[in-house]
Amino acid sequence: DAGVIQSPRHEVTEMGQEVTLRCKPISGHDYLFWYRQTMMRGLELLIYFNNNVPIDDSGMPEDRFSAKMPNASFSTLKIQPSEPRDSAVYFCASSTWGSGAYNEQFFGPGTRLTVL
Amino acid sequence: QQQVKQSPQSLIVQKGGISIINCAYENTAFDYFPWYQQFPGKGPALLIAIRPDVSEKKEGRFTISFNKSAKQFSLHIMDSQPGDSATYFCAASKHGGSQGNLIFGKGTKLSVKP
Image (tube, rainbow over all chains, first blue to last red; front, side, top):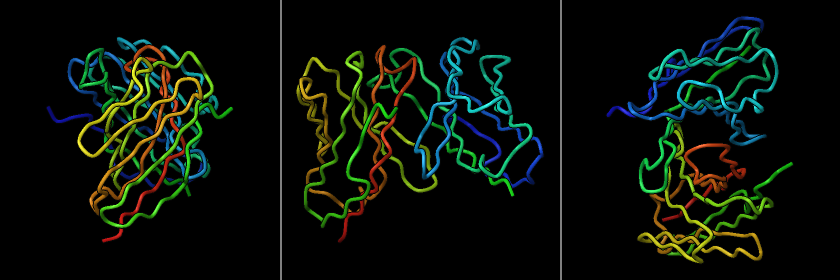
C-alpha cells in the first residue's frame, strides 16, 4: 500500500484565495482525520470522519474551513477565504480498528500551506 | 484547555545516553497513550503505545513508563543514537485510539549529538 496520499505537498497562495487540500486514505481504513500543525499550537485535530460521515468537527477553527469525504477513498479540506494565519502544515491520517499494533493512525506527508 | 502537557520542549543528549520525555494528562477517561515520532518534512509515525492496565511497555530501546495515579507517562530512549533525532509527541485518547480525538502534547525536539 502507498500509505496516505496528500496533495499538493506545498501550496502558496494569496490572502483571500480559496485553498483545497486533498487526501487519499489507506484502502480499507474507515476513519479519516485532518490535523493542523503549527509551532505555536502544535498538532491540532480539525475534524474526523467515520465511514465518510463527519463525527467531530469541533476543532475546525471557523466557518472559513470546511471538509468533505464524498467516498471512502477521498477527502478534501477547503479554506475559503484563506488568511495568513492559516499558514501551517496540514496532515491527513487514516486508521481502522486493529490497524497496526495499537490501532495506529497513519499520517500522510502533509501539505505545507503558506498564505501571503 | 491543554489536556496533555509535555516537557521538555527540547532536549540535547549525547550518543549513548538516555533521553527522557515526560507527559501529564488531565482526563481520567483516557485509555490509550501513544508516542509518535516525527522527522523533518514527514508526518508523525507511531512509535510505541501503552494502555493504563500496565505500568511499563518496552520495545527495543524505547520504553513507556506509566503512572496512573499521578496521571503521568514518560518515554525513555536508551542508548540514544543520532538517528533518533526527531520531534516526539505524546498523545492521549479514549476508545483505544483509532477513533475519536487523539490529543497531542506540544512535542519535544530531541537532538542526539555524536
